Image (tube, rainbow, N blue to C red; front, side):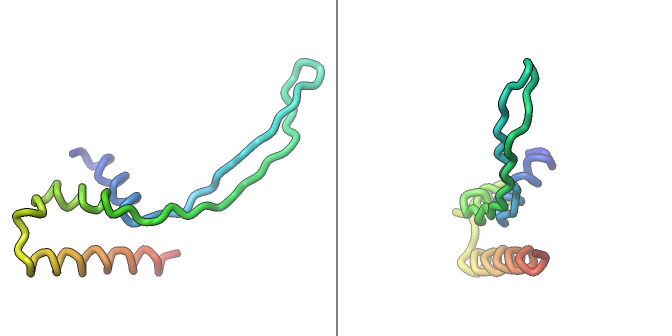
Amino acid sequence: MDEEMKAALRRKALGFDTDEVVEEYAFEEGEAVLLRRKVTKKTVPPDVSDAKMLTDEEKPLALFTAEELAAEKRRLLALLRDEEEKK
């Protein structure tokens, strides 16, 4: 898996904020004229399936011991806390 794909998965796994832009246009004298522009802040919540894909890339979950799974859980939760503190 290339680094760009890993970065995208990591972003989705941790969740992120984004702006949703909706623009409404009308045509006046053959030209499009912006009538209204609405920007809404949206929060995309963390996605566990993407976190799983990232960890599967490194080592399939079936091969983890109970201790390794607990450590991985702590690591992922710490990443989520760090990302939340940055906001």
